[in-house]
Amino acid sequence: MNNLPLLTENQQDDLVFKKESVLVETWQRLKQNKLAMFGLITIFLMIVLAFCAELITPYANAITMNFKQKLLLPSGQHWFGTDNFGRDVFARCLYGSRVSLAVGFGTSIASLLIGSVVGSMAGFIGGRVDNLIMRFMDLFSSMPAILLAMAVVAALGSGLVNVGIAITIASIPTFVRVVRSSVLSIADQEFIEAARAGGTRTPRIIFRHVLPNAIGPLIVQSTMNVSQMIIMAAVLSFLGMGVDPPQPEWGALLSEAKEFLRTAPYLMFFPGALICLSSFSMNVLGDGLRDALDPRLRD
Image 1 (spheres, rainbow, N blue to C red):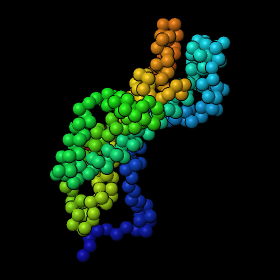
Image 2 (image 1 turned 60 degrees about the vertical axis):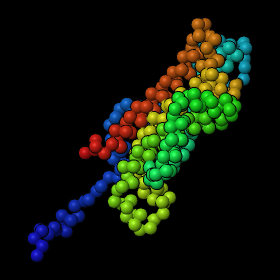
Image 3 (image 1 turned 90 degrees about the vertical axis):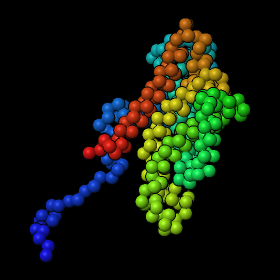
């Protein structure tokens, strides 16, 4: 006989069962991290300013030269001053953010997608496939990422697309290792064994069961990887292996300004500050996401 007390109709109406989703819980934890929120707001503002550049600055293309106004100090008319060709530095930084942020986020997403597939195959299938893939990744990892990217650009030629390809290739091994380590801890779980016993094919298991359970480390890694991508693209452009002039990009602006370090240091300060600010913002946002997604820190 059931000895549990019966609830009245009013008590049943007052009794509410509520379970927050992982996404809501993660957001609640992320909001408590002030540095992470600072990074999120900063990156969001940078993206908005980049998309609304035409509405913010009167210098529509940031390419038109005006030698009568070259090397002007920052003022109310030219917030960041002008360069040696009379171009508005604020406008060039604003339009350059489109290139830098697009390269950072685009290459990070591409590396995430490719690395997730390859890493999950290595960790889930194992055996010779795992050994072959990881030795191939070791070959790429034996060279520093920036040198590997420089080698790829040297082979393909300069340009925005080739820079994106080079940075993506240089970043894939990191994602492969992260995904593989996560998959190895998931592959022996009971629900994976149940899916195998039910006759589910390996590709479906990987995309339906394995990768969704490894999404936490991937989000953190891809977020923190954006800052590395931005810096890598800036280094390539600074060395003359990035975007083609006169297209503005933060690293290219630094390269153009290095000759005026003593006479016009503001030319290097503003694009350099934007690179540091975007990198710092993505790093603290990644740290905040790592803490928010860590199940050991949840209540």
